[in-house]
Amino acid sequence: MKLFSKDVLARLRLFRLRRQARKHPSPAAWAALSERCLAMGKVEAGYASVEEGLRDFPTSERLHALRRLIQKESLRERVKSLRQSLRRRPDPYLYARLANVFRQLGELSKAESIAEECKTRFPCDENPYLIIGEIRTERFKQELMARDGRLAVENLERAVSLNPDNLKGRMQLAELYAALGANSRALPHLLHLAEATPDDERIRGLIAEVGSRPVEEGELGALLRAAERRRRTPYPFPGGECPAGGGGTPAAVPAADPAAIRRAAAGLFGIRNLKALYVAYEPAGPIEVKEDPSLQADGFSRSAAKILKAAEASSRKMDMGGFAQGFLEGSFGRIVLRRTQGLEVALLLEASVPIDVAAREVDTFFDRIFGSHRIAARARRS
Amino acid sequence: MQDVLDKLNQEMGVRGSLVVTDDGVVAAASLVREEDRDLLGALATDISLKVRSALREGGLEGHSRLVLDAEYGRIVLYDLEVASLVVVLDRTINADATMIEIESAASRIRRLGRLFAAAQAGEE
Image 1 (tube, each protein chain N blue to C red):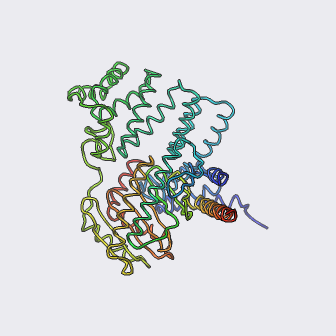
Image 2 (image 1 turned 90 degrees about the horizontal axis):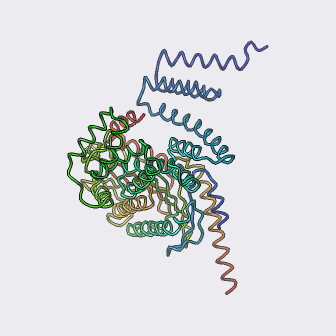
Image 3 (image 1 turned 135 degrees about the vertical axis):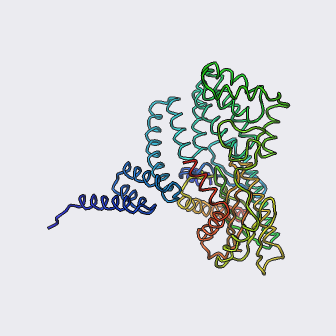
């Protein structure tokens, strides 16, 4: 005869895992507890466990990944129900909610296409313009592409013209203009905001700052193109960090030391069946090169440099932001490519080497160089 | 060919797909925004030719698949002998599952291309 039902045993196991996590906390213990909760269908308890774990281990990659997974799953459910509601009764408010869920999921292109659909159906509603404006502003901050900036301005201007009391859109527009140095365009929006919120110290400070700057020279398009070319905006984005290095300062990421890159690259030589390797850093050029003796002299380095350049150019032209990583397969084997913060790596491997094995080694290489910065940035974001 | 692309576009995370010949002509396309058709075709041909030429320069020839991950999306290019299958994906999707679908679409299109070439040769 069974003394305990399955349910009781499962609860007991859960209780033990929770006790274990609290008594001997570790990312693995919290993750195990959360995963068990999820397996039992207790999504909320699973999420709470991850949150509790993250309070103790805020930089744990595993716990962050688990939290993202849970968030995504619950958001997917919301997508389904919002789509159903939209089919029954199209409504700009529902469109905006659906687009925002896609934004939370990180699917920005879907969020944009939902907003575009809403624009077509409800051209006089400000929300889709605001959503596209926000997405493009965010992308402009990240990538400093003139096209993103132009679309951000166009959409935010439209949102504000449709509803002059939309303070959120007005604020974003003012900040964008202020960062670009389009001071005469920023001021009217800031004055409107000051009128609506007379006690806001930040807006008063911004008015004083922008008002003291010289009047900009040139059209907005020229200012955007200049920001793209220089990889920075003339002034900081008010009230926020700018990962792409906007704000007249270079990228927030510390510059990598070529000697450190060389040391870290030593780990890549350990990959089995590695035929050739190319490591280059933007300011310093090629740093570490290993060539396959069967290929032409410098053959792989030249190919890798050109492929990386073409990949970067195409990603940007296709409106996908900067190139991050890629791979190529063919009769020659496999090529793994990676580009982060101006550091480029290309590996030529035998076809028998699994891509994920090589990708893990490349991850380790980048972590050795930028690791502490990345963890800090992720912790800030979370 | 259009059916294969339309079916592929129903996969999760697929934003659009097209078959483009080596001289930049879009043979078939299934895209959310039709106005992107020519631009995407031209850009895909450009990257494909650049990669091919860079590989040839290094004595590495015959690539069959190219995957590029960018900040906001992923591009997959399959070599179809005289054309390329280009698929634009969201960055956040589970790539493995979708990649199998793309591979299967590529082989179906390749087969269709061969059948078409054989039929043309028969007519001549």
